[in-house]
Structure formats: C-alpha cells, structure tokens
Length: 261
Image (tube, rainbow, N blue to C red):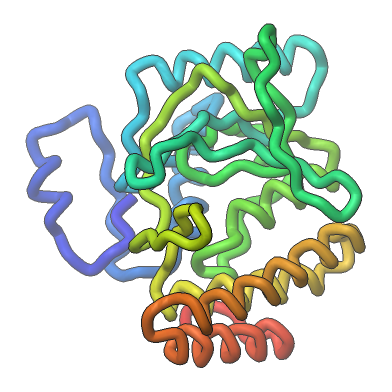
C-alpha cells in the first residue's frame, strides 16, 4: 500500500513482479490504507493478513512464529483477533510490553519460563497477523479515525465481540515509535508532533464515547489523557504548540469531527 502522492515506490518495485503495489495517490489515513489492503487480500483468497509500517523491520522468523501461534490457538477453538510480535525501538533499548486492563490499571504481561505467548488487550497494527475471517466478524478499521488509536480501537472492539489478541515473545520486530525521545525522571518517553497529538487526543475521546467500551477503559483512557496533556504542555519543547493541538483534538472528539484534519 502506498498511502502518499508520490510515485517513488512504483519506480522501485517495477522490476519486482511478485509484489503488488496499490497506490492511493494521496494520504487517506492509515485506516483506509489498511482496509484497502485487507479487501485485496480477501479478493486473492488469503488466509491471513500481516500489517506492517514502512519503518518496521521484522526478524527473519517473525511471521513463522506468529503463524505457528495463530494456528495453535485456532486448533483450541479460540477466536483470534490477531497475534503480534515483541517489538523494540532501538532508541529506547527495551521491548515494549504486552498489556492488559486489571481494574483501573494497565499492567504488563510478564513472560513466565514456559510462556510462548500471552493474551493482551490489543496489539499495535504493525507486525500484527490476523486471520482473514476475523475481519468479517469484527469489521474493518474505522476510517474516520484517520491515524492513531486505530489499532487500539479495533483490538478492543474485537475483544468485545469475543475475539482476542495475543503477544508472541519469540516473534521479534524493530519498530520506530515517536518522532523523538526525551528523558524524564530516568525514563525515555516518545514524543510525537503536535499534529499527531491532535489525532491522539481526538480519537481517544471519540473512543471513550463508544457505547460498547467498558467504563473501566473509559476511566483509564481519560486519566491517561490528563497526564499526557500536562506532560506534553509543560515538559517538552514547544509545549504550547502541543497544547493547542491537543485542546483542538479534545474538542473535535467531543463534537465528533472525524477524518483528516
């Protein structure tokens, strides 16, 4: 999927007959691009869809590890929304956690000695392997979100419908998270652009307004937004630019103004 206005990829791939390129011609958002790719996968009879961002680098055995777990779970009669890898941003230096909601807290799924995989409440889209029939049951990505929270919304929606996400420890991937990182109280925290924070806050508020989302998740998401608003306003460079876009995002989430800004 080429979700941009340029034809660079077409030139690069012109001598790669095994690769099919679908060029959208402009940026319609990650959700639209993913949906077009998913529908194409259905047309050609694919059993699974693997989503990848352009800046993700899967390990050579990542897909094999994911596929093995997906088949194992399906054989047990479990409805699989997706299986995803353990990913790392080299700038941070440690693998991102698989998380789940426990009461009003998001907790990490720690790996136990015999664990090959764990259940998680959602996965990032990049690296996620999904059985094609799961999209029929859960639905496609919500294109109104454009970018940010698209994968979280889909994962939580799938969970509400009885389809579950799983993190696979031995499936590895490098992935870039955020435009830059800053150090704060001994931690390294990813920082996106003010525009990205607009989408982040708008879509989080929009998600909290979904009637199917649990009250616990709504409290957790709103509390995270409060902390993020304060942090990105007062502790990162050009905080007022971030504050302006976050505030606009909050308002647009409330009045349901979706799509591309």
